[in-house]
Length: 247
Length: 220
Image (cartoon, rainbow over all chains, first blue to last red; front, side, top):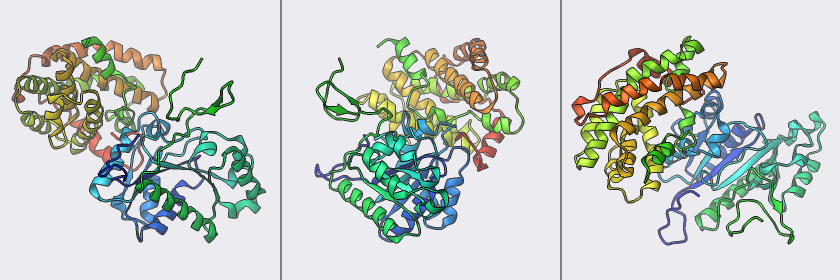
């Protein structure tokens, strides 16, 4: 878990760290550009990107002009994008800390994973909360297939709903499929051209920031493993805080 | 604590210290035409130059930490022998990564504290603090520096070149005697001015070129 600098025992002393992950091409960089555009007026932001082969994402964000280029750091992952957000988060954590030191105090640092597959999610040691991104162009059955990010990321975004008519996908069905595997966790059907969906996304980010500042946000691991079931009818994934023993 | 077990822990590629982000200039070398067959020679050149500096720095740092002497002069001596700014930067970033771990493992160590107060300590000095705390001998520490470099390049080679992984491990194995010679040569060093000043201008150039490129897999 990230170190929580507490002065009075309840409030969190550093900014909120938000992870953005999901398969290649689902719109992670665009989502981050959107967040920067919408939030930079009243929040201090930083961005860390993990592109697999180039610093393309960092350059895209810098050229988008939504944030001071110095606040965007690219981390090379040595062709291990999954490792860098999961089993050895050191390089990313150092980049986040450097941004936080250089531009103190930052309200939010966004960490963009290198586009990986459906199984990659952030370790709670790196981010406090995470957005998993899929898009309608990836096919209507993606949400139904599930996976740790789709099922248990703090927020699931079904992106590019404006393209749905062109790819023969029903976004409402996709959201409903996702809802049925997420046990009440939030899902947002997003399109840059739909202001209400953008508003919903921003409201979620602000609410996570409030929970973080108030000390109520406890980073949760979507896990690489599916939750499993015990004979007594309880189920859990391996991110819970109580001890138990497997038979 | 068993010296052998601590060595294994610190030499393990699974250590969460951002090792997967490093190629030891191999990526830049491959971009400028280095082939798979030339990788063992590349590794040997590193042992003869930059790794010698790093291992010497670690050993002298270890001696001074144990003797209660200041380590700033070691950091200065290392910097003076590492002319390429991106290489100094990389070692300092990796030092920061390793320091995170070493602080957790040895929270009460005065040696770790002595290195942590330095302005951006290089990786060999942080490793020296771990060695001083865990009771590693100077030659063991030098072996660790050399071995880590061999494996860093070998595992990066698997990402960069079409290669049988058994070949890569064979290269590391075949260079172990060279690593041992290096360890024996630097183990007796105690003074900053004794740290080898062996340089490899081609590695420096590659490090500088790599830092400028926008298309790279590895940080360095």
